[in-house]
Image (cartoon, rainbow, N blue to C red; front, side, top):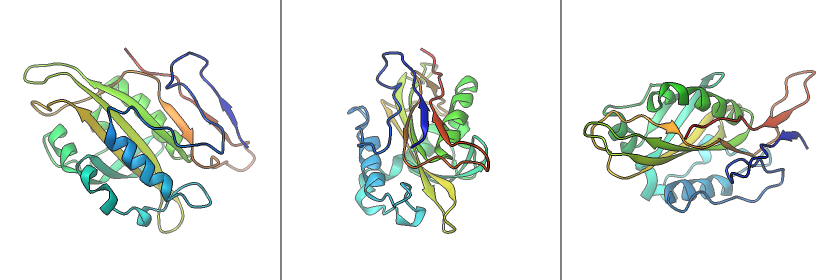
Length: 208
């Protein structure tokens, strides 16, 4: 069992669960996040992380427009390989090949990088989001869920993601900021470097 640093503030989003853990439902206002997390949970292998090839789009047909697959290409950086139509609508163009950070404001990109660093160590992360009101752009609430996947070589190099929003998109591009601390749930023992004690920690962050 690895150590975890736990944010002691009362926010329900500030918990890190110890293994083994039961799947916690996301906010009921984000049904796509709930459905995809449940599907991911059902596919977990003995390591605790499903394989990319195990993802079956058929049970997720209702939510495919909000899903994406990204590749971890550098510490804290993920590049989108496949994306649903909703992501194209948010961005106003095809997002494939772009970094996931393209959907976020400057300050929120640091928090996204912290979340991706956790996912690269085998954690599942969620980030509550908000896109602020602008000309032709109504305010939107959102939720980003990031779940680790392994590639064909067994490396933890892929991310199954859901970017779900509530309300009309309005004029693209839409970019999000975070509204609460990241929640990271350990899905598998973090990958330790030689000579290092593995640990899972919660990155404090978020802006109101």
